[in-house]
Image (cartoon, rainbow, N blue to C red):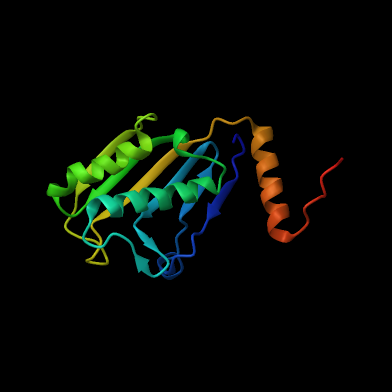
Length: 156
């Protein structure tokens, strides 16, 4: 992704709309995924379970990254915010399940709380896209065509 264009992805979260932010932004070769929790729509997954909240939060963040055609192998930095130091091992276990073979740099911070007091974990991702520019252009052209219904039929 060598283009300097900035592209944004929305997940449909009501918070994105209320607060005016994107779930993920690609700028050049860099892709940033905003703080992501274990909410899917209005439903909180893993209430009271830091491992499950971390697992779902990472899955949600990777889903946003996937909108740019990238996966866990492109992740170079993770950040984990948790409300209790006692949850470090459980959140770390979820992180390892997604990134053990990738080994991004990471930061884990204990915070005093989140907007929703049921939340125990929030995660952020930073990725680097190493694909050639032609691949990126083809992916975006195909995605745009699929969204606006102008897909060209396959050639036989």
